[in-house]
Image 1 (cartoon, rainbow, N blue to C red):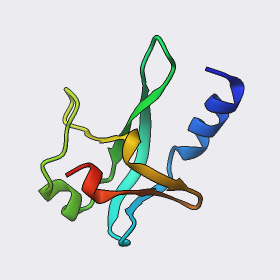
Image 2: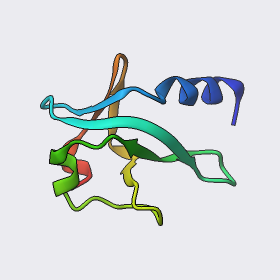
Image 3: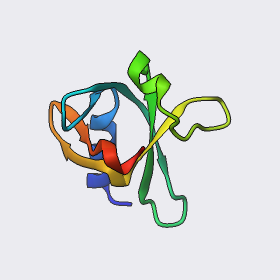
Length: 87
């Protein structure tokens, strides 16, 4: 994993996660990488919204909601995810 990737991933933490239809999901709390490849595989959601908590999303052993990084379609002021890719 290069410096660029590390810098990019640090910039994601704290961003608000929204779907492309504008539904708020919460914020990026942390990131999970594949140890061997360094590939970003999951976003750990913090402060999930009530809407998000009602969805049956994948959770880690501590009960944090996980969003597959493959669902991310844009990053900027917000992290935009394709809701249909996670439900």
